[in-house]
Image (cartoon, rainbow, N blue to C red; front, side, top):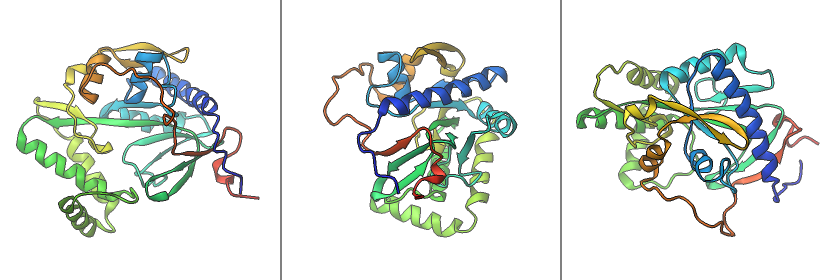
Length: 275
């Protein structure tokens, strides 16, 4: 088994993420699929024209229609060394969104509960679904979201008593039918037809509502010398996501991707651990 390289060459991992992102961007532009940088990648683009200095991955989002189109196209158009990992295809039972993974690389991460996950370097693709504005609809969809999260293996959780009880009941009821339940919940979101809705990342476990007009216009933004798509009003996105407008702060000694254990851009992760 290879020794853990605790002094990770963070820049190496970042550079490889850019390579994956370039290929995703090329595919999306070819087939007219809209996406946007999201989460910490927006903060990085806004403050540094690239990664937050201590960040190790790229996050993008798509609305459900573009997301499903992208997954369908990837079956035939994705470069041979890449693959989609998600709950649906069984390659990653810990997430309900997707990752584009380079199969010829190795990335070892330390997850909660001390669990180690070995996979290739990746780019996260989260999906935004319609979220009703009325209280009853939001309660129903939020419950569906919490229930479908019980399908995945998240490791050790530190929930409150009633949250733990709810999840245990859900796990008992859907045990053995996780895939069917996931598809049922997905259809509920895809078939929502009311004109009164916001968008949110329910399948990523978030219920923050974003106004729909935020996703009407996209633009290109400089990210590590490359142009990637982002929602045009990304400042409003940041204010909605994080509840603030100021994001800059000095780097502190503890600002590092502490969950990273090992990385290798030239060795397939399926060979990790072999002599």
